[in-house]
Length: 367
Image (cartoon, rainbow, N blue to C red; front, top):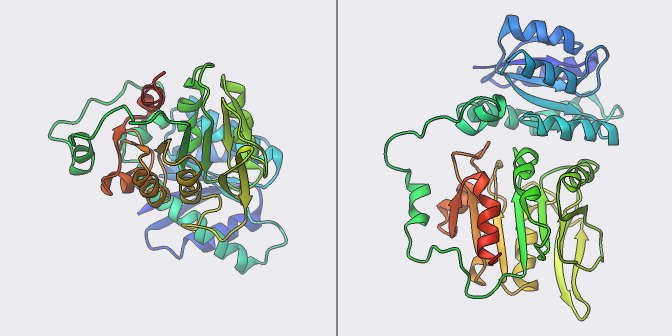
């Protein structure tokens, strides 16, 4: 049974969350709090596994509560409950960078009660279940306790998934043709992981980087701005019709698929609102598939931590064109879903830990 504490200053949302979560036989709501100060007391008393934490609250907001939990070494997993505003998105991205597991967008006040329940059930329940599973993983424990020493390597032979691609003769950090672009797909655990990947690109890295992070509008802009402040490359939210420039990281905007097309002027970004793919918009597969045509396979593609299998089919298309595929390993993935499917499909040229992703990209690109 997964014990959940709900923290929100709105009695309406506390009720919606309670009524929704109690439907799941694997989840038990052990308490509710209306602000961060009360939440800290209940976390100590009730020892929940997961905390649903509102971003904007009086007395102690969500970010302050998360920081206080870190200071007191309280280690339940945290899922942020965020409003679709610039300030709410900014605080949420900051919380994710500080170790929050994920976030769920709070339904707008105009939504009916039953509609709000349905939206929360579709988005929040799977994340709570994934969160509980991820709490068993070393990568997630390191996020919760960033100052703790790394866990010792587990004894025994490697699993079939991580071993198979690494022993194939074709595994190499060289491509037959020099790559012309980098593509990254990531979901749950992404903002924290991207902080370890994007800022490590050196100033002399001239290739464009295309990034899909599963996030709604506003949040992707905040993510791009945060990464830009930490990086030597320019990081920006992609715009429809803009020409691709070197040394630039293009983040797919929330609610839009990002595609890359080739024309007489060069490579151009196209944003579409075609139907969601793998229940996502933006999705990784459409980007990867477009890059297979636009760059004729001259791509290094990376699939990182996240739920689901988005990225697998697109990586297959890229691989058929000669692209180099990297999958994040199980040990360092907060959620070993997306990279697992790539590894199990046998299309990963290299499976590597989070801190080796950027060095591997640079080596493949011969920098």
